[in-house]
Image (cartoon, rainbow, N blue to C red):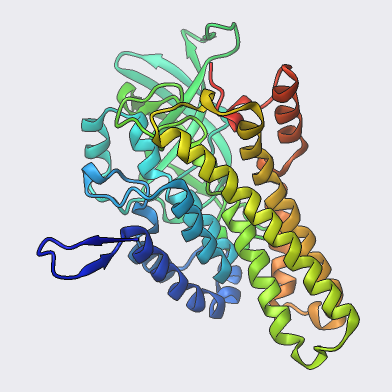
Length: 393
């Protein structure tokens, strides 16, 4: 796909193709520096700059802002390409690219003041573990959150918190404790160096605290309320769509690595069968993810809503996402076993990928709660994690 430049003299690559090409080029550098990234337990500053130069952090911003406004499919392809080089860099790219998505749930004038550059990074934990007391004009936010992936290089921090008034928890229309998301400048957040983990070590997903910081009402958001530009990217579950890109990129990298390392065993039956089995699983899993994304985009870009999807189509989104995480871990495990003792050394990327996929599979999007929610939705029951289906109250 191309667009024509202003003079009409030559076709120029579409923004998505440009960003994807830069991401694929960067992946080669990331692979070379993967051990360094892991040892640092965060992305080095120059790696963050290289990611920013690809355009990954700006890819969700609207064209009316001068952004590329990539589709969910294109965003997933870009993150997948980066994760092919390094899982932690892919994870941080996936998280950091949400800034343009959050902008749609803020008043446009507020968002433009907060994000003067389209390449600004947002990090944080969306689950409401903090406490926000109502005060004139906004809230006083206090709490401690885990898993602030990319917070060591973020510009803004988004955090979920329960709302209190005069010390009493507020309730929503269903009677449940009310909560929302709060955006705070990174300078007002204390990062706690807790990120000593099995995998995704380079993502810098540290704990962080916010101590009695005033957050204006206009710097809060709820996924049920679109205040900015509407459209396919202004949907409650939009921030989850490109998540399967990380495990898909890692699984592809592992298969390619073992293919190259096994060239001398081209006639070995076990090598042949294992590689083919892993390739089949990746192909089927990746097809499931992109088929679900394409169908969703087709409906939403045609002025439809998530409710216009059939129950099977809607459930396919979280289910294909979960399957990507679990299948990637299975693929890496089988390839690790195939390579036997050569895989056990830390210098082997298979050792790192095994730890990375094990860690990422502990995220809620890869847990049985997703299966329960999708199953309950299909049966007409009560999903425990409604947001994964784009359901909001």
